[in-house]
Length: 116
Image (cartoon, rainbow, N blue to C red; front, side, top):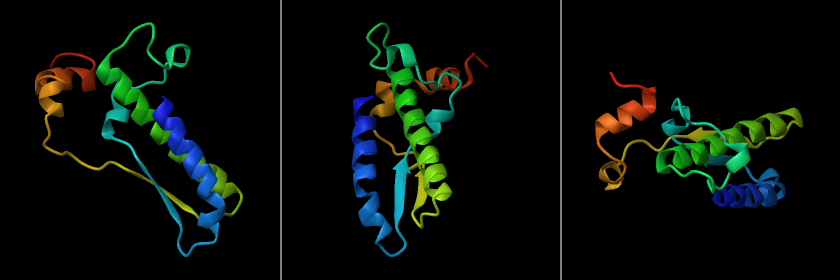
């Protein structure tokens, strides 16, 4: 989760500069993976020291990005900020991730929590 904290600190450090900008926005990249049935924040094992699963870890990081963007939007809106917060899913890109993370059947089962 340390890479999520870096984005958090950088964004908060830039808020004063952004407030002075014309049409300021923060774009938070996430993924539809954050909506997977197994996507959750494991507060008792944030670094996956007890148990590690690459897809669960990835989905947790995307959930954390989404939570950060939603909370930032809520807090900025409450104080009347002109900064817009946008959450974005970059879309599918054909890379070796698909072969690295298993077959599409494995991905379907991960997304839906069961076999079809």
